[in-house]
Length: 53
Image (cartoon, rainbow, N blue to C red):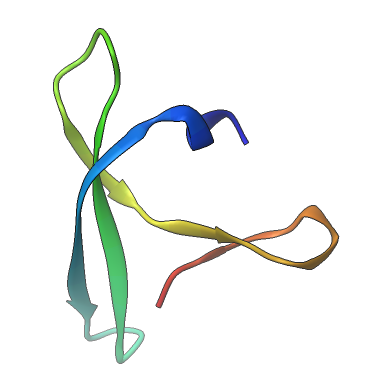
């Protein structure tokens, strides 16, 4: 994945009442840009990617 080379600075849970689950967010540092929060994704079977909850 293209995002695998980004440096992860922090991981934070965020509750989403619509799904009744906690989803993980990660703070990433991209070389030229300011750090930003994004959804944490984990690799799955057959090159699939899933949200970390």
